[in-house]
Length: 167
Image 1 (spheres, one colour):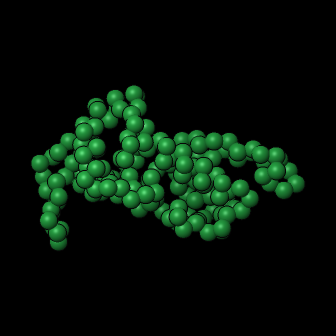
Image 2 (cartoon, one colour; image 1 turned 60 degrees about the horizontal axis):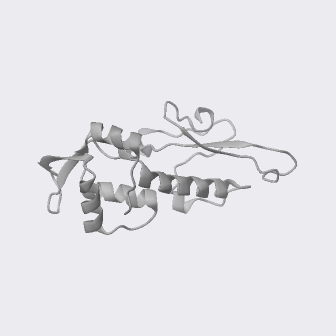
Image 3 (cartoon, rainbow, N blue to C red; image 1 turned 60 degrees about the vertical axis):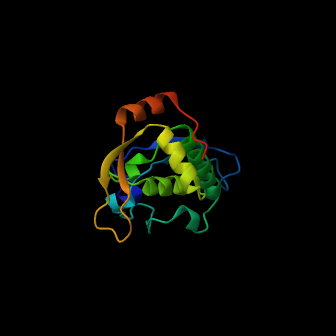
């Protein structure tokens, strides 16, 4: 990844090996795909090696991809959508102190769907992995929302045990 994009020192999780015999013309090629959940503003992309152009693109606005790469992306999106319902993930994408709306928007992005606001809030608060900081947003043009942070101990237990987050 460093050679292609200049991005280094990130946690990568292996997604799957793709090795269908006919996935690449004229030879057998096996691709081991990885994914990571990162804040794009924390990383500067620098095209290198065989990448003439490296840029961040919204997953729902990808250009046409070669070979079976669209299938790999779809597999990754489905994997992530399943994972977010059974394991607390993606919290590193939020600020240290966040609102329930920011958390909901993260889940909506990961799940690729709009969620019912009252239902989401009720379910997420019932899971007890959030700590209400008894603080409000500052310098906003709307009614200031409560700020929360993750309870690391509850988060670690949920990560070990897993859960079903049916939103």
